[in-house]
Amino acid sequence: MSLPSFFNWQIRRSTPRPVPSAPSSASDSSGSSGSSASSASTHQTKRNLTKVVSPGDSAHISPIKYAYDPVPEVPQYLSPLPFEFPHYATKSCAYATLNAVKIKPRAAGLPYRSSLDYVRGNKNWKANLDESVKLLELIVADKAALDEEVGKGITLSKIAKKELRPGLEHRMVVATSYMFPFADERRLRQIATLMIMYFVFDDKVEETPEGSPLSNFRTDFLRRFREPSSVESDVSTMSELQHHLDFTVRIIGEEDSISGNGGKEMLEALMAAFHCVHPDGDFHSLEDYLKFRRLNVGARFVIAAAKFSIKSSVDVKDPRFARYLSLVGDHYGIINDMASYDKESKALREGETQDMINIVAVFQTLLSLPDARAAKAAAYGYQLQVEAWIVEEIEALESFGKLSDEDWWFVEAVLLSATGNVFFCMTSSRYGGQAAMIEPQYTS
Image (tube, rainbow, N blue to C red; front, side, top):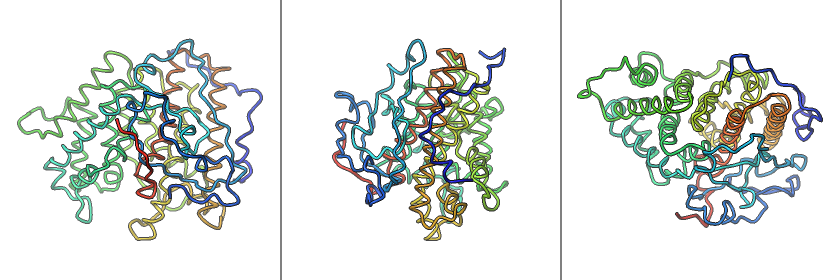
């Protein structure tokens, strides 16, 4: 693994590479700039939240109260050229006009650490918040979640209750509105339910041994999503949470019957995501880490949800999309790792966790880098390289892919899930905490 190859990200191929043919049957909030920081760094730009959306659109996005910069000191040799998604489809996706609003983080002076300058928010963000609160309250009140301990006196109910504390709209729930901006209200609500289940239960479910109380709770949860017809139908014995989960599965099925088939794939991908486990031992190469992270980050679920959001029937296994989707999957993990590194490092120092599974730590170990600052720069450089490869894939799809409009809408929706993840990580209190709080704040 040579460092220079990671930093050649600004180089574009003069001729896009061919893509496989489709199968015949396929349809610290600011930091100090320092002498090595780039003069173009966004955190040096005067912040003006009135410019984050067009005049009159402020009510269409969730209030912004945090701005976390995961790389406050950017080396001068890392100065990304913004990439705006090229609209190769003959017409725009109808759901974009109906449900999405353009977000301009750079114009607002926010520390948006990505060269993919294409971000949207969902106008139905209040429905996302409402659905998320409803589900969390059901988990808090559920007897099984209330009684079952997951370790050190923590129950599933307590986990959900913690998420319901003031400031909920600035934590994990906001991800759905930015990652799936094209979804209508009904579909956004179903995605919100699955996203909450993923966020709240992810770590606890995958770390719990078979046969434990949580494993039994997990079995019931997974069965309701995988085999709804086999679930106990006696409504008198069902909890409100079980009713709600069954209702979610039913609505997703109804939506698939109306248009697309992303709902079924979304449920299947969520089930697969819950079976991920932590790796044994250290990572001996970057590729070893990325192979693990592609599964652990739930990329398949996010891509399926993006497809569901636009009511698409595109074949996600179409070989033309293979490299593009793989790179976007890497991007999800890299962005989350960059955002969570300081938080995870603190937890490791204070004994709250026993290991550090993060790309920044992987770079520091593999390249014998002297400190976290150097490791962050290396990881950020690789992130920009991945983004350059994503751009090249989009160019290759245009030159050789022979994509339909529906194909291009899918490519666009997936890209927006990646840039929405960047925006979420920056504007959520989940990573930067109180140190990243900013004023003024939008009010709707």
